[in-house]
Image (cartoon, rainbow, N blue to C red):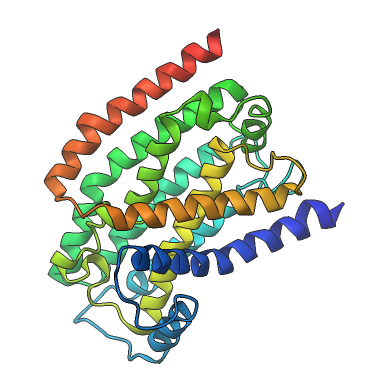
Amino acid sequence: MILDQLIWPLLLVFAALVIGPYCLVVLDGLAARSFGLAQAQSVWISPLSRATWLLKQQTNMTEAPDQWGWRLAPALYLSLAAIGLALVPWSRDWVATDIVTSLVLWGSVEALATVVIFLQGWSANTHLTLIGAYRYVALGLSYILISMFVLIGVALPAESLALTQVVASQEELWNVLRQPLGLPLFLIVGLAITFRGPFNLADSTDLAGGTSADVSGPQRLVWEFARSAMLVAFSGIATTAFLGGWLGPWLPGPLWVALKMLAVLAVLAWLSRVFARITPERCVSLMWVVLLPLSFIDLIWAGVEALL
């Protein structure tokens, strides 16, 4: 009983937290190579080499930073990613945090991520990091609203806010087919909250690295690891909410979840390479004028489908 309800789920969460970011960096390297971008090393060794280099690098220190905030922000971001992974049901019984309001808890993870990202930029006490922090906060509300609408949409057919019930409601038809707008919108939110590809505005090159412009050494390693881990958590929630979670023929449920998460990560890595970074002004327009109304249409679609 304890093995199935506690030990195995926690081991899977830990494995996803450790292996998932490595897989994401490898997939990102493969995506870069497919677009003709040269890689100095093998994509399999490159993540380990960079991690080793950052561990040996000297830690930078700005003038009069908020010491506690600056050091805690990367760890808090990583903790939020771990909480998100703990909500992913690997099978009907293997869930580290099986609560009836797991979708609400995930929504709070996204909201708290905004606070932590702002803390990362504000606590360094330099102007470029602060601009990156304010830039993210200016956009963060639109990300959260889009995610909220599409996740309410998957809760309607399940008649529950528990992710296990959301998976169970997809036994006849996955939500990716039932609500075709939901998954693309949720993946865009994932890229935005981890500021990757076209939505890399908080840590962008025009701000010399934005919220992490003055971060180096092990602290930078934790920040980059946390960003990757948060995208892994997003892939887990997307797998659960739209791709049927553990449902699938022949293979064990946890293996299906892992394969679907890898497929989602591969798509996200490709999307982050194929689209150029957009300007903050265009991002605001895209979120509030295009994507937010589309998420509301997705919610209406889900409500009508649930009533029929």
